[in-house]
Amino acid sequence: MGAWQPLPEELPAEVRHFVEQLRLLKDRTGMSLVALGTRTAYSKSSWQRYLNASQPPPRQAVVALCRVAGVAGEETERFGVRWELAVRAWPREPMPPVPPVPPAPPVRVPAGGPVPGPVSGGEPAPGAEAAVPAAYVVPAARGRDGYEEDPTLPWWDLLDEEWSRQPPASRTPRLLLYAALLAVVLLLAAVVGAVTLG
Image 1: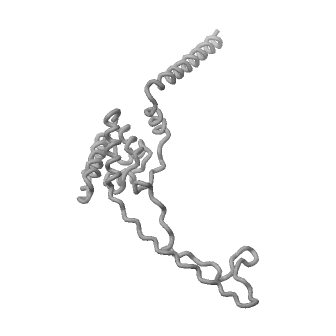
Image 2: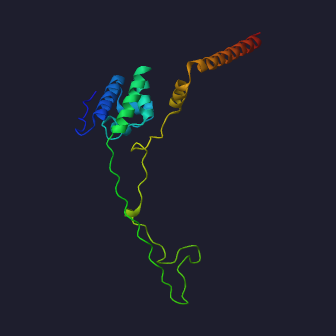
Image 3: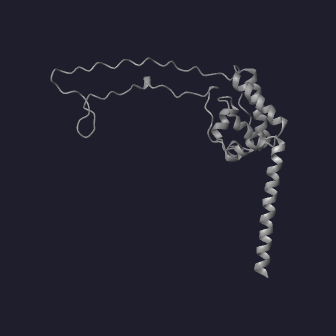
């Protein structure tokens, strides 16, 4: 494994501890960032941002890293708690102030003259359109925690989360149902095999 770049000095202690633990977990996998990206559905560049404390990772990325590293049970829960503490303490980038939008200039129409507007063909009349300056475009809103969730959550993680949320008592009937269906399929395969060979 290559040496990690030093974390910024101004990082809060919760963020520093969390990122250091993530780095240890990533090193424990023995994978490159490219391989980790393939196994977790989060890109190499995303992992670089998460592991260098440039951006907080989504909770699902932490769960995926725990899964790849073979972490389960209480240790995964501890990573979830560390994640919550780190995200709350993560330094927020100040949002740039949004300049006020200037009022539209009044339209002066000469008495008896044409009103500027669409001409035939649906095109606006020359001078009727006004370009919005880039300074007045409102930036996209960020998430509640100061970052946007990465939408690339693999479907198998959704199944794992749904399964782990269920109480153990409700998992047993589903396992029995799957076992019964498997037994029926195997029995049908044996019957069909016996009929075709006989």
